Every structure is written in structure tokens, then in C-alpha cells.
Length: 227
Picture 1 (cartoon, rainbow, N blue to C red):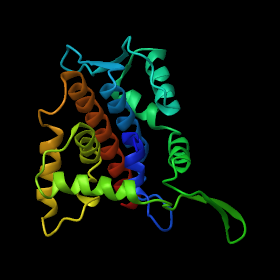
Picture 2 (spheres, rainbow, N blue to C red):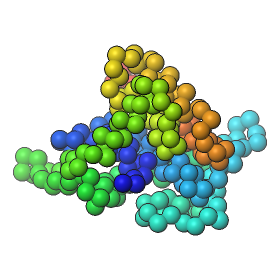
Picture 3 (cartoon, rainbow, N blue to C red):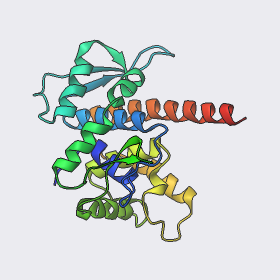
């Protein structure tokens, strides 16, 4: 079935049995970057690079038809509100998107929703796997590209670009003995490769810069708190 890149990202970060999300520190930035890349793949946004030394890329809607997926439609509406930098937009696009994306995966029959209480007091919602076929195929395609050296198709390459910016590409595949350094290098090679139109590449570059900034900020904050 057809899924959004952001939905695939969530699937990769969910524990199949417990239904709990892992690596959530900068997940919102990752989801925002994935949605921006998705809009670029659909030719619904353009990313215009700044001309000055410190100028940042700005994102604009295009005249293309709006997406039918409600989460993407909301994301495009946010892009259309006013001109924003990609870094600002990625944070805004990802905020509050987890639940609707997870609900979409539930509606598609991929996830199940489980509501309960911890110690009988605190409400908890989990999303265990109901049908693992799509995720298994997704991980196979990622493994083909990252571990076995195959050339990925466009959407798989876009997902790898998002994972690479989040420093997670090496964690979502069976390395089959390959060192982490090599997997990271392969992910970056794919992300930087000549596989997409310029508009998509510009969006990916801008989204990666925004996500990387979020990762660095989160890491610095964690280090300061624990120091």
C-alpha cells in the first residue's frame, strides 16, 4: 500500500510488540522534514535558496493541486500561510503530527490501537503492529540500499535522506556485519546522490539542515542537563 514517508518513519521507530515509540527526542523535526520532502516529491512546494552568506532557504507553495491526504493538506496550508525558512517550517510541520499519522496507519490496518492505564491511574496509548507485511518490505528495501548496495527508488532514497539527517539510518536495518561507520557513509551517499529532480534535492538539503540543527540542539541540551 502507499504510505507517506512520515508514516514509514514512524513505523521504523515503533516497537512492533509494545507499540512504543523509540528515539523520540527529535522525532517531530524528522516528521516535519519528511512532510516537507513529501510535498516536494508531489511538486507542491518549491525551496528557494537565499542569496546572502547567512540567508536560509525559503519554502513556497506551487500552483500544483493540493494533496488529498489530510496531514499533507494541513502541511501545505501551513506553507501557504506566509514565507518561512525551511528550518522554521520543519519544526512547525512536525509538531502535533504523530497522532494523526499513527491513526492513519491504524485505519490502513497496519497498526492496532491499545488504550490502557499505568498502575490504574495514568492513561497510555500504544500502537502495536497488526499487519507487519508493509514494514517488512520497507526494511528489506532499506537493507537492499544500505547493506547490499542496490540503487534505491526515489521514495526509499528520500526516506534514507531523512533517516541520515536524524542519524538513524544505521539503526533500522540488519547490518549483516557492516560497521556503523560504513552504513552511515552509505546513507549519506544515497542522500547526496543524483536521484531526484533539483526541486526535490533542494527540499531535502534544506530539510536535512533543519533536522541536523534540531539533532545538534537536542544533543547539546541533553549533555548540559546531564553535565
